[in-house]
Length: 457
Length: 119
Image 1 (cartoon, helix red, strand yellow):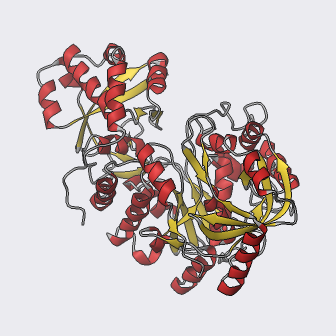
Image 2: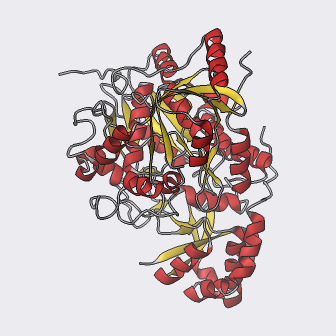
Image 3: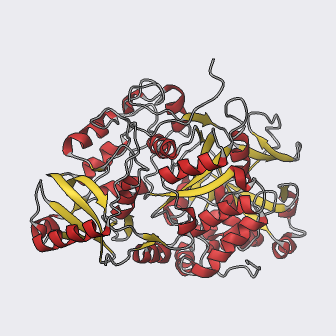
């Protein structure tokens, strides 16, 4: 019997790293593309009805090129897209849940005049950023793409409860895609520079694995977040980390998803710093707790999103991943335990007749399915729902409950939110004049992004 | 199914409820550190609220959350007016939905931050 768990290999066998560091070579590429007129300024994806930003493809290019989405190397071809939509597998056979597409409008396509075999320079904030080596150009129907990406109650009866619509932010992202897809590999040729506070938490997979080595973390459990942590989250992290091999996990990797969010979520800056405050204030020792992020405009696809999370965190070197109820969910589209069903027994209609760790091309990261923590006035502690027998007395806490308190200017009691975490929320509240994501913040984020792009000279 | 609207009470609000029949329904939660009253509503009123406010959602406790502060203030005032925690207080608030939406639109731009040290 193996006593120790080894760090899993990257998904697909190797980390994708498509970042050109040679400035001279990059300049030559830029010149060649400019000469050929093959230059495209990245635009945000706008809501197909309202025109507000819902996605910026630069985040996907970053996540692909720095290896978070390994083994994906670029925008998917039509065959790969079909494979992902019908089987949740890449053409290579490796599991992958979502279409990754570089989409442009018909007008832009006509203006560009590029085709398969061409190289396209992608500019971000007006500066050279990446290239796309075009393998195929094809057209999609965004409405069909959105429906097939998430499924329907008829096609995925095990877990889909309601038809997806424009109240679902992930469905809206795919519905708002432009119809022309340029498929091919991305390469970053001019590395963006992260702005504070993002710069402190940018830990791509290779770097993350190095940090695990330095810290001596044989086992590490990933915590998915898109929220500031309340004490329930903290307890979830601490308790889930008791799994491991012969001893509890050596480390907890908090990996926040940074990108366009729902109105009412917390600003990205507050999420990262608030999680960091958990270790700075000593609620979890800093040498066992690491805060990081992935760039991704969240699709809120519950079990599908959990697959992407598993892939990202396996690539980062985690041995375990905690999954709670309503994982990466919004509304009542999915069964509340859809993610846990997937990782416990599979969801055949999504291509998993077994858990994703047991199928061919599957993942190696181990799921740690958790229920919830509530405050028990009888136990006088934050209690685990499956342990605490005081069902009648339980007091459930939720992010929404705390948001309600925050909005009314009531400081949440320390028993449900650490005062240091609340102070961090207020710090960013003062900066943005608002505690949560609103239209103004979404516009601000789209204009400024998380990065600046340096001159290539 | 029953859904819940929670109204948290600070000292000012507690004073307003003192001596009313609602006072007996004040609950202390989280180790006594928070005081709250709860209004229960049915499916129809829940749907009206979700329709009225884009941010509104149902949390894991079947509570309707993320409604605008203006809505919560109006709800509290109506509880004081009617001295009741029945569904009728919510219906009365929803009768003035346009005014609340107007206030909510302003509050979507700006909410004053609490005056606490953050450094």
